[in-house]
Image 1 (cartoon, rainbow, N blue to C red):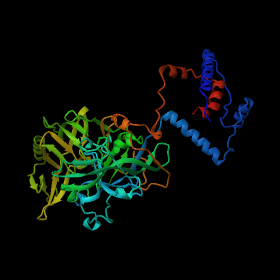
Image 2: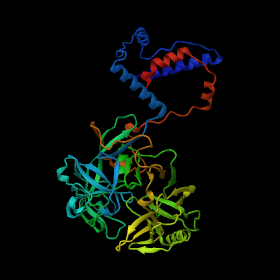
Image 3: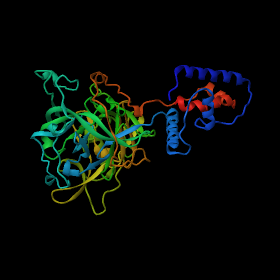
Image 4: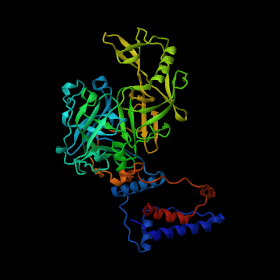
Length: 528
């Protein structure tokens, strides 16, 4: 039942008058009356108001009390955050060299839904799937020894929720090259890996997600996203990397995290966690724990279009070589970590001096050491010192590899790269819950076993049966506002402001105002 603005004003006036009258320091006492009690009902009847409460201790009565509790908690605490994860589960999968050392997640797309095993890539924006294939990688499970089912090809014609994006759409980058604004929008994405690309046409369709958190029950969500119908792949995408597509997680307007934020589902933030057991999690809308370390994203060539951080020093053991700083792209699509050549030489030289062992080059890895029966000497610790003196400790910089002759080696997961831009890859992310918070332009990290959301709440990998909710694709006006997002009801609202010094002083006077208490207790259910 809603209360009118006039009634609110009258109530607040009465409260203020009572506070003034009691300022002299008088103390009153009175019996409290519950807002849903028989006495409260009699009070409203005496005022000519017809009220009915559910029967005491009935299911309806308990639901009413619980609903009122949730409303009060929202006033006190603000709305609790909502997180989203793929309907197939939040768990990420790692298959080692079988699928090019990338991390993958199962997602459901379209109506009816079809499952795809997509690689997670924070270094690109587009979600693309093999589709109407002219040149695609094999999709049969017999081609991949660790898969127990065939991979799928996306078909816009078989999804009733699919529709093509025109060349006039705000998200069509190649629109100016089209002959007509009504034509189907084409796309081409070239990747860092040599001669690796995907091309085709853009479609809109539904991504199936599961929501958890806040005061809402866990339920299912349909989110409108943009899909690249990838009819032609090249390079690594034809030789085992991401045969069933890539989910670009970058900050571009076409990425899944950006579109979820623009549609008002969650903040423009997400987390990746890659555990030491090779499993992990992904959550959209995750801001991370309060005690996490943070470092600001910086511009690359004066453009904020990817996740780049400033590394001030690369430290080995207790030594941080001079002039070992560089900018680094944080890229979950890169299996290993790359340092600018000059920095790489400094770091490896310092590492070998502390290890006192001889380096060997094994196939593509230049920094390896042969394993003996006693193993390796104590491996010095490694850490990145980011801006604001934030320390990013490398949990496990080494990995094992066997040569073609059958010998075993320990290798540092570092490689040199041309230029002054490095890459922090998956191997340095292991053991961390990494938060990509584009709203606040911060990278956050905290140690985690990647089995939960916030260290306490377990998440079921299977969504329960529930009604589906769906928002439309962001409007053109929303697309033109890259800095903001529509706020969903599940995350709307702000926490109650902290009390001022004046209000704290008034509380310390220990006034007990019986009339004020009665008014507030009776009116509270209708005010909130």
